[in-house]
Image: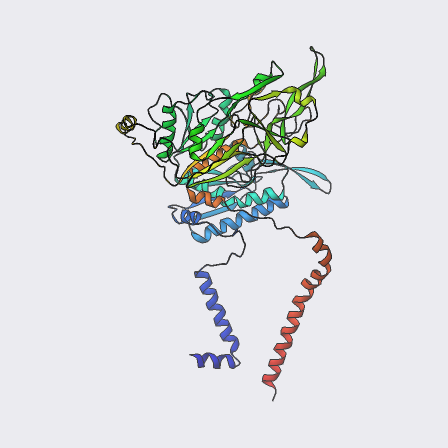
Length: 580
C-alpha cells in the first residue's frame, strides 16, 4: 500500500491522491463534528447541563429570536452570539432544534397589518427604547432582545438582555452574552418541569403582609408559587416548600419557632433572610427631626451565628446613596424643599462575585446593617453585596437626625471600603439544638413524622441580607404600590426623567430577589452554566499608537511574502524535477 501511494505521489497523477485525501477528510468531518475552544473562559463550549437537556428532548423545540434588523453594533453582536449558541445546540440534535430570527416589524402570518411587535407588546414584553446617533441626527429605535421558545404546546420567554437600559455599554453587552446560555437553560428547565417551586413567606413574627409586599408578589408570580406560612401556629415547616422566606420580622422569635426553622434547614430546606437588626424607620422622621435606632431583639443571633454569619448592631452610611426630600427654606405654610443625598439609603453596586449578583444594576437599601462571616466547619461563604469605597458604620444606639444634611458631610469619616451587607452560605449546616433539645421534644417531633436531625445535607443554602426593606415597595399617594427599589420621594413617574428633571436610576432589587430564589431552587448544573463570564480584553492604547505602522505593514506585507516564498520554493523543486 505504501509503495502504491509513493508511486502515485511521485507520478504526474499526484493531484489525484491529494483530491482523494481531501474527499475523505470532508466525509469524515461531515459525520463527526469536533472543534477546539481556545478561549480562556470557554465561551464557545456548552455546559454539560445544556448538552444533557438537548439530548433528552422528546419532541422538536421551536425558538424564535426577535433580533433581526438594523440594530446598533452592540445588539448586532448579541444577535450573532445568539445565533452561534443556537447553532451549537443544533449540532447536538439537529432534528430537535429549530430556530429562526424574526424582525419585530414583519407582518404576523395570517394578518394584513398586525406586526410581530404588536404581538410581543400584547404578551407584556417591553422593548428597549434606544437612542441611535445618525448623520442627520438622533433616532429612537425599539429593540426586543427576546426569544420565545415553544415546546409541547407551551411557550416561554427568554430575556436576552436582562439589564433593560436604554443606554447600552459594552460591559452590559458582554455580561448579557455571558449569561446567554444560562437564560436559555433555565427557560428550558421551566418547560420540562412546569411545576413552579414553592416559597413559604413567613408570617407571625411581625412580617409585613400589606400593600408593601405587592412588588414581591408581582416579581415572583411567573416563576414561583408564593404562600404565607405562620411558623407560630404550625407544628413544623413542611418539606414541600423549597424555600422559607423571612422578611423584616419585628417580633421576637421563640425557641420553638427557631427549632422549626433549624429543622427545616436540617432536612434540606433553604432559607432567605431579609432582616433588620435595628429598629430604624423612615416614618419616625416625619413628625420629628430625629430618631434613635435600637435593637429589635429578634433572638436570631445564635441561630445565624451557628450557620456562619452575624448581623451587626450598626447602620451602614455611604456617600453612594439615594435621595430624600428636605425642607431647606421658605415658611411653614409654603416650605421650600430640595432633594439631598441621604447616607442611610446606600446604593449598592454589583461586585459580580456570584451568579446571583452578576450583571445587576444598582440596588437600593434603607437603614442597612453590616454582616460578618463566622468560622463554621464545612460552610462556604460568599459576600453578595457590600458598600462603596466611601462608607462607614455607626453603632447602636444610633441617633439619626435630619439635621445631618444641613451640614457638609464629613467625608474623611467615610473611609471604609466594601462593608459586607449580604452573604450566601453553602454547605452542611449543624443544628444549634444538637446538644440542647430535650428527649421529650425530640420524641414529639418523631411522633409528627419529622425526626430530629443534627446535620443538613451537603448542598444546603442560606442567604442573609441585613436589610428588611430591601424587597418591600413604597406606596405612592398618586400611583399606589411602586416597583421594588423605587423611592417615592424622587421617582414619581415611570420615565427616564421626572417632570422636575430629577434623574431616574433603575434599581435591580427585584432581579436580585429572583436571582436568589432561582439559585436556591434550581439545579446545580443550571447555575454552573450561569457562572460563565466573558472578560473584556482592552488593547494598550500606548502600544497601539507606537506600533500602529509596524502592524499595518506586517498585516499587509507578511501574507504577500509567504505567497512569494512559497512560489519560489515550488518553482525550485519543479525546475529540479524536470531539468534534464
